[in-house]
Length: 100
Image 1 (cartoon, rainbow, N blue to C red):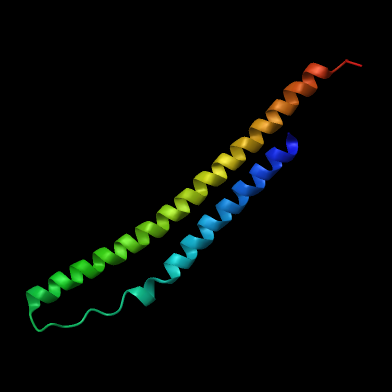
Image 2: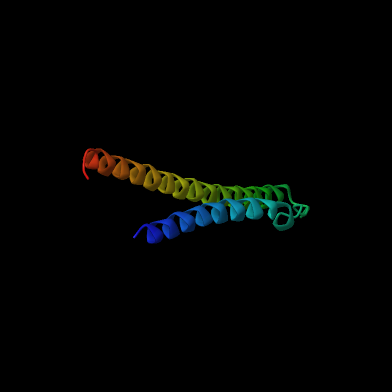
């Protein structure tokens, strides 16, 4: 049973790392996917294009932040499992004191 639990802990650790690595890599793509905004010659159209470009950048950053958040949540779950396992072992050790 403990081997199964260790596999889950290592899987959660790997998942945490993957989320954070992918968030970093996705952030790194920002300059490549946000070319400079072209001038259309119409101030109103240029303003609209700039607003759309800014929205795309904000969505890009927001998605990378979400990936990081998921990585943090998986790390928290892994740490909670680890604390719970230590607590359960402590209870069993306390119950077994004086036995045998």
